[in-house]
Length: 407
Image (cartoon, rainbow, N blue to C red; front, side):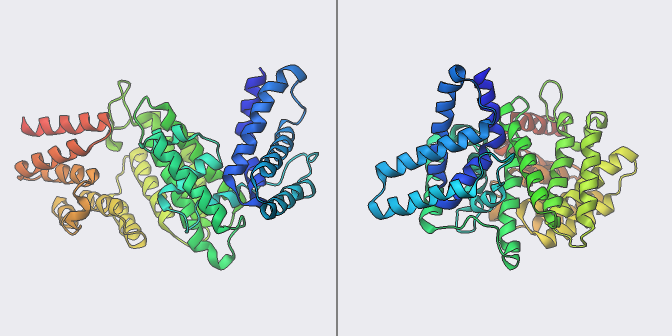
């Protein structure tokens, strides 16, 4: 019972507590260590002494004391005076008797996605510092070793501390450059879970965590249309999660999915969120991507495919964000709207060096070539796509398509 209450308290307040503890000293790792000590103390004391009325306040008070103790043992005289002063300020800044503590998580999101930090660690750093996931779980989701992920996370936190990166929201003129890394990291977190294998619950949980981060961002920054665009995009994709795999785990492409399995509640929320983003009249990458998903869903539900609209939206998206994945999807959409040759021509425009190991390129090329007389080239493209596929269900799907072409 006590263990469950500890876990619940930590899950609900971890990001708030880490943000409060690290905002003054600007040392995320030390804040996490202090909170970890508090959690251990709770597990030891609550079963005997009873669960406090306000577990979050108890954890914060104990964590602050443990941080002070750690600082006294390890810091130099100058650092000790400075750190103790900063930690002591928490007493005046945070009212432990208040119904709710100040929510500093948004500031922590911007710290985790600061441009000075390696973009590849933005999403994992958010997951650990804001959500409290351990390095092993994050490593499994991003397909790296726990030791390597642990080292990268530690280096990022040291850089934040040593560079004195501020725990504050960017100024208005800085926001466009600072918001994009936050949005990209949240989306990377979502994709790492949404693209997981059928039975990989650990990775699927990341999609839910990303949705939580997206909601937090829109709640705290209600004037940012791209934040709403990203949330709408994730909601659209998440609404179809139960239809993406058959009962045996086999991959099911969007065109073959059973629309009855889609979440109508999620789809309605996605449409409302997208409309809210569009009301600002400031279209951007995530709004275009959400609009594309909306168009796909709309034509499946109404039975009236609007391929030209989808292709036009991909053109807008490509001009806004000319990334490799967008270029490949644009070619596929163009093929559906304007013919296979038009799609293949767009694929041919992509630099060959960029797609050598990019599996979606070869899967799309194989599909388009299979609709022409170039079956030999299609088989070669299928072979490369199959070799590069990391998801067994996708690999099986492509293998079946290849076999069908041969027959």
